Length: 227
Image (cartoon, rainbow, N blue to C red; front, side, top):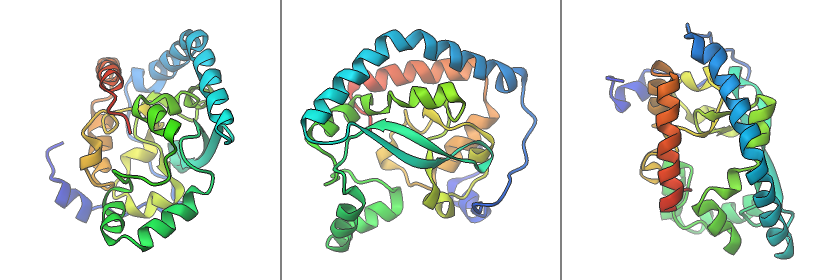
């Protein structure tokens, strides 16, 4: 994408919760092949993934927490769905975040810019481990199987973040477990900058692009740079 992030952000209006974003022309892979690949890959991964998820679910439960966590996210065509994860944060995470941000102006500025914190007080000890290697996201394969998500796509957006997102490409794609933003230096970019990643991905969506992003994801997991 040749347009700069600054111009892109200024020239784009956030999408409301009721808005429908017109679809763009898509090639055969985007229309049919991508969904078929998702289903095949999930079915192939299940024998290895299910035991791993159950193992960490037991570990989290022994730590005194409900092992699974669900949250409303925005998906294809602006439709809200419930996304599954292994719990990596304390149960009262929202309240703890509010208290932390109100007493820490630097953290508030970081959150407003990126919607993430480098030093997040909500994350549990086991949560830090499973987030580092993206194990907490394995239950999202269920969302992929249902059609809420794709293996590769934009980072799933929370419903309250729609007013912060300046693009429209996100709403024409299924959000992904991995994707261009997820394998980038994502702690160093603003939340609004995701729109550029999503726009570029939509324009270059091919089987080759998805394969390249999956291979990059393996590198991210091995290096333990997930977040």
